[in-house]
Image (cartoon, rainbow, N blue to C red; front, side, top):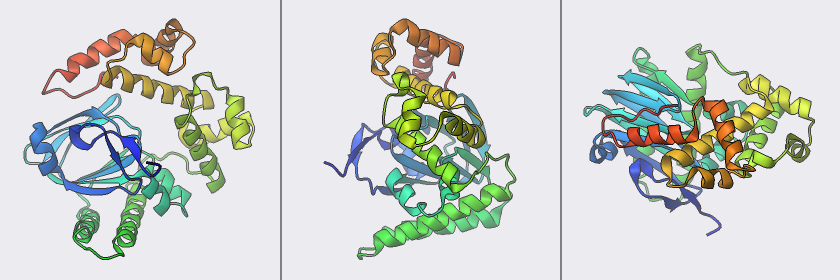
Length: 305
């Protein structure tokens, strides 16, 4: 099973194993109707998702933020990010889900494009009909391609995906959003490599020196890269990752706080609790209790952090 990986299921399904070449398109109304239009907060470990909404309304939940929307929208969701939705019953649109490997492949020659796709975005296209139609045309082309049975389907899908992501890249500039700094390609490469090293190890007891040694750069250089790209120090980037992992484990597993502290390799549960409270301004126990209460409510999907 070297060519497969574990991934959280789509739309409430149990965990399942999918190919690193996974490419999936589904209408939002057909996939969400059986869940009463509520998608509880969840994450996908190695899967990017693009939600192109044609009509209807709802609430988008991402970590500590909730954002209502209506009409034509594009939502970009990179891997390893908690997110959820509450949709209206008249929602229409598509969800495009693509394995991280495929995204990395089609953006390999353009680091700025790859960087844009690693930012959670919600773009209101209600007053940008031509831009929406361009994206919708590409989604329809992807949909038609799935009906083909020839040997070029993979290449065609990747080409259409590249066009889709380039359109997103241009939209981000067109919208004039406050953008994170896009540095030189080499800086972005270092930053992306740093994130990969964090995600493939448990960084709790790994020193910054160990990361910089692996990357072949100094601590000062890595800190400057993190500050310029995401406005955080190296330590803050690591802390953000640990907090995200802790919140996922508290919300979506039956592990005790002690077991979570052990899994994340904190030296003891007291240290973990102090770390969590400093970051979230609440204790792990209170956070778990509040989110269990949220999870039991059919009509409420917002996270309390």
